[in-house]
Image (cartoon, rainbow, N blue to C red; front, top):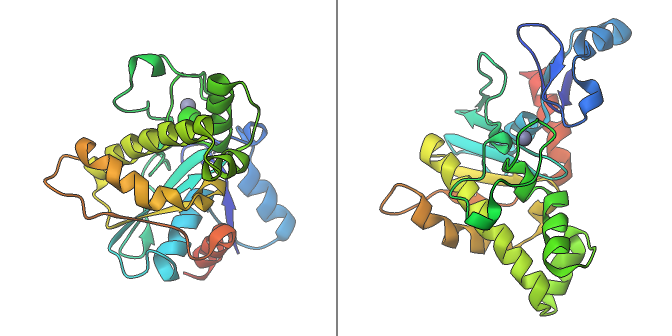
Length: 239
Ligand SMILES: [Zn+2]
């Protein structure tokens, strides 16, 4: 059995850490679950599961290096190289969401407080709730990200401006990942991956921030959508 969770199981303690479902942190989820189901289970971060699913037979199939991104209530990431999810000694591989927003403008500093204890994390700018909060701060209207996208499509200038701020922040944040990992493909997942304009606009914005004469990394929507988390968990169990 494969199980995807938010955060990760600390290799040092066996307890959950880093979950934005913060009530899981410090709890022996793996031990408790394995006792209840009475069989071996493999656990991985949910964004790692998403990346594994999309890299195996999804939007990143055939690519050597895939960065899978969750843009939802939180911001996570997973890295798959040659078909294998990379973990690392701290089990935090791909966790770009709690790096600071790169190349911040003066009005982006110090940035919103984050549940991790710092301020100005990428997650506090490019998650779904962050997009809604940014729009409310700028325009005064309380809308969710889907409503903001609809209004932008209808030509609402405030909604359009919010999405343009969002796209530039996402482009800078992904440029930071490209500079370190140089992935062939970046697959977006989570609720904001439904914003189809991101796939065309963000790659046009990231060039000045990537240390390269040109950027051939592809930014693509997921093939398996919301199913990719559980599909990736199943791949864990089957591999
Ligand atoms: Zn944070």
